[in-house]
Length: 279
DNA sequence: AACCAGGGTGAGC
DNA sequence: GCTCACCATGGT
Image 1 (cartoon, protein in one colour):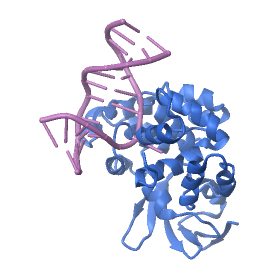
Image 2: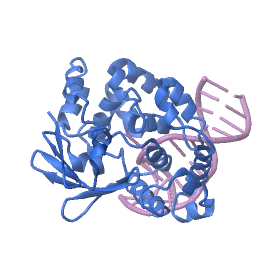
Image 3: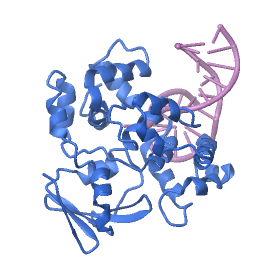
């Protein structure tokens, strides 16, 4: 059972399986955490510059305020029963094995805006480059971390292209503009998966896959099942060989994995990428 | 030199 | 509704 205590501007987190390296750096659900030579992790999340220091049976989260405990507990998804999800997959041994294979993988609950920007950048791109772009985009903000919608909407398309965003530059800019002009990302939390999905598709640079990532990683809608090239391959190999396209894979995944399909997806995705699932 | 990467868009059907 | 060429960039 996870226990959190506050001491000297830090949370001491004990009794968690959370694999920091896997979850913050390797899992490709978040792109702006950095690991230093000491094995410490750092990032700016929702405007807060924090550090994470691994410890025996947990970690230390530095530079936080006591009233933010609920925020971080949610960010690291500490209140979800991952074992129960694995146990529910009795009839889907490959999926169960994938989850048991990566017991420390957690699905972060990121600020929606951060997930939105990161996954617009992710389109037809590779992980090292997404990380690089996330870094460069962060350099645009005065305070570090991702620029706000106000800030980003004032950056020219040419400047974004100069940073290496390529054809995603106008998507970023226009999406930032829409959010600035009143497109309410927080309101999406009050909607069903389908409603929020439809709304997200209105944003330039957001299609089915990016919308699902924003819903899973930013809105906490755990039924969202992002289907990228890896997930499409693995799903066709092991679960839905007759699926004709990504949308059909997505629909069938909901039927197979249920309300927490996205949590299962993370393990499947990572196992496939690591070569732990043959394709 | 083609092909790939956590795809999206618009045109044409 | 559907498919498909095209879109930057850097790595293999």
